[in-house]
Image (cartoon, rainbow, N blue to C red; front, side):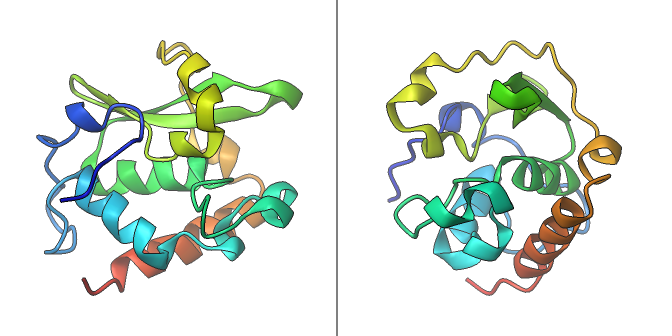
Length: 148
C-alpha cells in the first residue's frame, strides 16, 4: 500500500470521479499514483523550474496544471496560496476535502503553507500563458492514455 505524504491525502479517499473519467480512476489517490508513475515529467514542469526538476521531486512545478486536471476529473474548486513573485501555488477543494497533490515539492516548507481558500484560481488566467496551457494539455493527454 502506498504511503501518501501530500497535504490532505486523508480527506480525499472518499472523493469520487465525475462521469466520463477513466475507469482506473477511483479517487485522487489513484490519480496521484498514476502521476507518480511517470506522468509528471520535466516537460510538464514550469519552465522556470525545469532545471531543478527530477524523478526524486516529480511534483516540482506541476501545481496549477495538476490542480486543473483534478478539477476536470473530480469537480470542485482550485485555490491558490500566494508565493513570491506574484505566483500562486494551487490546490483543490472538493466538498469537505482539501488536498494538494503537489505539496511534496516544498519539502519541510510544506508545513508552513496556509490552505485558507482565500484565493480562487481560474484556468482562464492561468492558461493565458500559452506554455502553461500546453503543459496542461500534455499532462491531460498522458492521464487520459494511462494504463495502470
